[in-house]
Amino acid sequence: MSGHTDNAITIDAPMDLVWRMANDVPSWPELFTEYAAAEVLHRDGDRVRFRLTTVPDENGASQTWVSERLHDPAARTVRAQRIELGPFKYMHLFWEFTPDGDGVRLRWVQDFEVRDDAPFDDAAVAARLNRLSPVQMRHIRAAIESAARAAEPVDAGA
View (cartoon, rainbow, N blue to C red):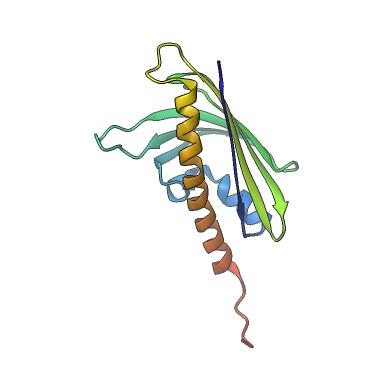
């Protein structure tokens, strides 16, 4: 058994800005509502290893894990995986940035399999990701579109 999700959103901002902001791991606590901290552990060219810590839940518990991302600026894609797997046998992520009109379509594909002793199954994780990914994507879109508006030159003749 394995799980798979595929979610996308269009962001009304220039590609360079979307790429830069979405891939700036240290700023993820401002881009994502679910992360309290994002600490870069190692960089090597287009590869970055980092630790994420979630915002505490209603019981005060947070989760932390190490992941690694490999950026391909020419293809405008990112391949990532969890290094500290926690309840997963594997967790692979693929981010794709494609032009969409005057904006950028940001797509997240996640493939994973939970361990047999996990307190949930692949279907439950997929349902959670399909519920929460669009929420996070809308938050990211709002932040990037706000930055794009702030960067626009003011028309003195208007």
